[in-house]
Amino acid sequence: MNRILVTEKIAAEGLAVLRQAGTVDVRLDLDKPTLISIIGEYDALVVRSATKVTAEVIAAGERLRVIGRAGTGVDNIDVEAATRRGIIVVNAPASNNVAVAELTIGLLISLARRIPQAHASLQSGRWARNDFVGWEVRGKTLGLVGLGRIGSEVARRARSLEMEVLAYDPVVSFDRAEQLGVSLVTLDELVQRSDVISLHVPLIESTRNLFDQQRIMQMKRGAYLINASRGGIVDEVALVEALNSGHLGGAALDVYNQEPLPADSPLLGHPKIITVPHIGASTTEAQLSAGTEMAEGVVTALNGGTPRYAVNAPFVAPEAWNVLQPYLNLGRLLGTLVMQLVQEPVRSYDLELGGELADMDTQPVRLAVLQGLLAASSSERITPVNAPIIARERGVRMTERVSPEAENYAGLITLHVQTAERTRTFSGTVLRGEPHIVQMDGYFVDFVPQGSLLITYHHDQPGMIGKVGQLLGAADVNISGMYVGRRAPRERAVMVLTLDEPAPPQVMEQIATIPGIQAAFSVEL
Ligand SMILES: NC(=O)C1=CN([C@@H]2O[C@H](COP(=O)(O)OP(=O)(O)OC[C@H]3O[C@@H](n4cnc5c(N)ncnc54)[C@H](O)[C@@H]3O)[C@@H](O)[C@H]2O)C=CC1
Ligand SMILES: O=C(O)CCC(=O)C(=O)O
Image: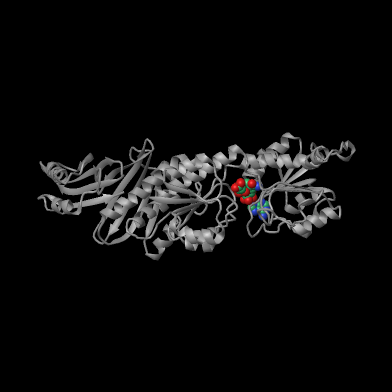
């Protein structure tokens, strides 16, 4: 039974999804030493932004297979340390775009009209209308640093407020910016032209201290700065100095160098700074989708699959996901099946991806097949994250080719296995979203690869199925499905039985001695 540790508050719906995969312990009170002392008992760790999942925590998590981040930024997780250990890191990157964008617009208007200050003034018993003459955002220039998911949502909203929007993002294309009604410029130009700058970049080495003293002083006199991305991107000391000297008109912050509570910070209580306690993602809607999206990824990873949003596994474009996802499952199962059937030395594997797969980025499918092959022969935990590293270490050779041909199927995965003596071939497809094995060693079959299987290669003659069935029946093993394939009558044939439980070893030995049986395999998927 999997054990899942949740160290921060996530939506109840997310917890319910997690419970499908194991027992869930919610511990909101853990300090670092306690986390390190208990993490070794868990298969999955679920956090938001406050828990620091350091290399030390990861090293102590001997059983950890997945770390779930209910939200976007993963700067509180040592992803590199997780990757080295084959631990999948999943997040929910699309869950809180709108929540953060709406907060940003709220902060923008709050800066323009000093709403929080006006509220506090009236609450303290003053009616000071003349102190609160603001400015209109219409016609002003907003500079967005980062035009990814959140930056784009902010841009749309700012355009509808009739603002001119500039953006600096080295990755985004001019076409995309044009669609959003945004002008792409250099960072220098953005900083010099914007009345308000809003930051929407991840905290990575290249963005750390991006708004340092020099950059802040490059901003227009009287300009405003909004940061709802991460503390660490703005030099907080330089920001306060620029506000005190009158160089900047104001700032609004959701995130801080020190979280939680940047106590004693000059940011708190500053009349020109609006502060909120990292609430960008704190809406019911965002928490629901962050919790459930992340939890679905954790459950998939615990079940050995490739999660949709795995930070350290191959990226699957959102529009390709629905088509590709069942093939990832098929690829892994095909690899696991083949590794249990081919019990002879292998020189190399040749993976052929046909039909609708030919038009896609097939790297995730290749990794899923590798994962299946390696997992069936390894005591290590193999995930799509560490599969290439382990394959390299073991000298596994796999070539890959794509072809528009897929017989009569929409898509087809074929694995050719080059052994010392011969080439063996296995194929699978996806039908109604379900993986099917459709060819084994040149025999046409059709079964869903799951659970316990008994596979025999035998001489096609009357009574074979009955004899195998009798031995299984005597051992009280129930057969749930049966598939046979042959090339010609009375020649070699293959039989696949799906069983409610694995055939015991002594039954396998008896089956192997039935006259006409050439090989019998108990396969677990
Ligand atoms: N305040 C809050 O509660 C939340 C904050 N965030 C923060 O917002 C950040 C952005 O989130 P998304 O838009 O979803 O990420 P995203 O990955 O969709 O977009 C980030 C964009 O920043 C760009 N970028 C990277 N380095 C840059 C640089 N040096 N200069 C300019 N652009 C650069 C990237 O090309 C990308 O387009 C997250 O990494 C996270 O730290 C995210 C969610 C909630
Ligand atoms: O509310 C949270 O957990 C933090 C949200 C956040 O910063 C993120 O998703 O990156």
